[in-house]
Amino acid sequence: MSQAPQASRGPVVTPVRVVIAVCLIAPFVAMLWVGSYAKTDPAFIGIPFFYWYQMAWVLISTALTMIAYKLWQRDQRARSAAKGGASQ
Image 1 (spheres, helix red, strand yellow):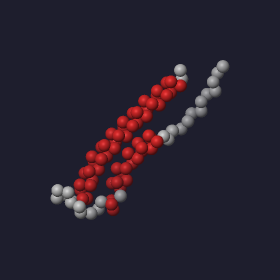
Image 2: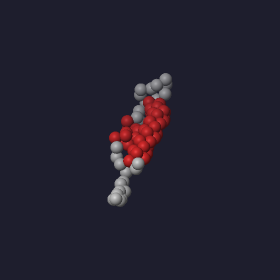
Image 3: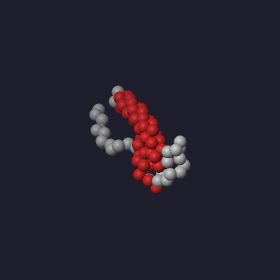
Image 4: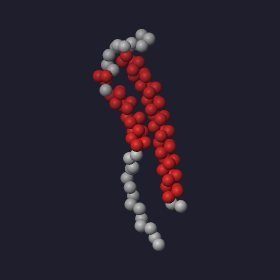
């Protein structure tokens, strides 16, 4: 008995992938919305807000990218395990 060929499906949207997208998009939105940080106060150790806000986003972006990468790895492992288990 032969099985019907599976239709190729497009990308699957899962909650994990939505979180990954938000992690990767958030720094762009934060930096492109210049009106939210185009000011001098509050200053932090003498550095105007405009500058330290952007420097803080360098660190935040690094953390969010790392989180997105780890979530992507976990998602890919889960998908390959599910695919391998389903074909047996």
